[in-house]
Length: 308
Image 1 (spheres, rainbow, N blue to C red):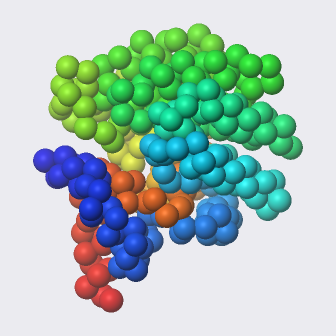
Image 2: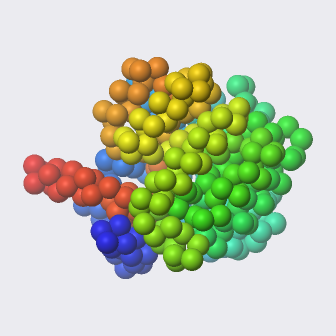
Image 3: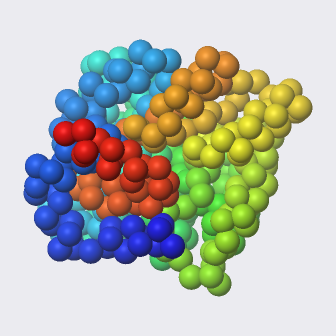
């Protein structure tokens, strides 16, 4: 119920306009969003790298409404890739296709994203572009897009996507992606979806996550397990040990500002951890979804407000 409440808030345009323009809103989001500028993301990434973890940088935004907005978003990502090289960051990038203009002009989005993947592939060492997954209306389009990008010469090791365990179709999608050696980030899913296409019960989402996680871990391809669920993390550790999987054959992925104690604990135990660091002015929908995913985040914000 709490999760659905915050999902609905994430879709409220009036609240979004107020929050993204107010100093209070920006202060509240500071725990989970690095800032509004590339320099903020670079500083946050450097700090995370010093803690022994890699990073995925995301310029927050989705559903641009015209080609100029899409081109501006792409230019920011080109600058991020340059900053990764210049500052010797252990980082890759995550992006959403609707932020690159998918709903405005699919050919433009294809041109933009293929250019970013080519730029990442040409970096030394080669970079990586994670094409993020959005709501279910975009699932098939995103998978088709990524498979097309992956087949382009030189791109095979520089592009991957995301699979959400709450979708009933995800096992089939994983089989198709693995057949082409495409890297996957596995997450539970943060959008509101109807029961006919998504598991409504948390227990079913979790069970499907573990099932898919084991398929990925045994695939021989480097994947990311995006979760803060300690029970699932313990199961992944036990499975890796039982199957004699190398600690560098996969990575745990977690969100900036959430369970930093758990992130460090995994690093100390020798596991690879990547932290997803978002930045940008369009942070409100992301922030609301994070609050909905974990009630403890709401209590954390409230405690810090009372201390102010």
